[in-house]
Amino acid sequence: MSRRDVVEAEDPRLSRRRMVRREILRLLDRAGSLGLFSHKVWRSLSSYLDDVTLSEVERDLDYLSEEQTGYVRVELIEQETGSNAKLATITAKGQNLLLRAIPPDPGVD
Image (cartoon, rainbow, N blue to C red):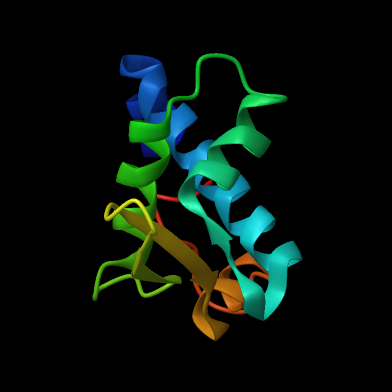
């Protein structure tokens, strides 16, 4: 049994978060250079993943866009209503992670 198996056995939520992050990268990869707003990512994921929330998606986008990871670029776009929406696009590093051209990230399944 690997260390990862032990960690997942202790906390299955960790495994789910890694899987959700992978799915976010896949959706953004399909969207290409246009990217997707966080609420569109959430709607897409919620069509086949139970109980995924918008706040969970935004938290995972934050992880994927951190300086250390750099798999996603997130921009705040001001809406006509005056609120901001997160527009996410996958980076070359994120595409390389999906293609397994770079070492795996323990936070992404």
